Image (cartoon, rainbow, N blue to C red):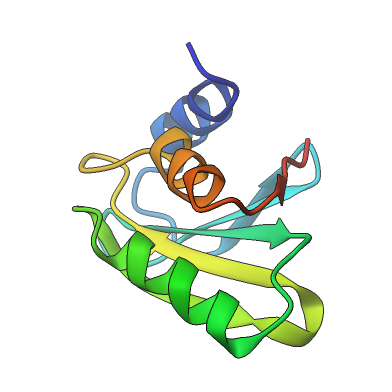
Length: 106
């Protein structure tokens, strides 16, 4: 079981239909609409608009990723996804395969 799955599964099971943000181990998860989560990842070497676009395009190609919102000046990327269709492990793997480094929190 991956680091991400161990953290997401209990949160997913406990949220039900709540719509407010919740936090565990310093990581913010948000139950957005229906069955989508937003997860903010710090990408330490995302330095340019081109980097943000490259990562965003690759993530949006993944089934289950609904939207990607880069915050370049903070080196953060928020990924909105359906955890039934994709996983945080897959999202992290895509980012790593592109050659970028992300920070796991928690």
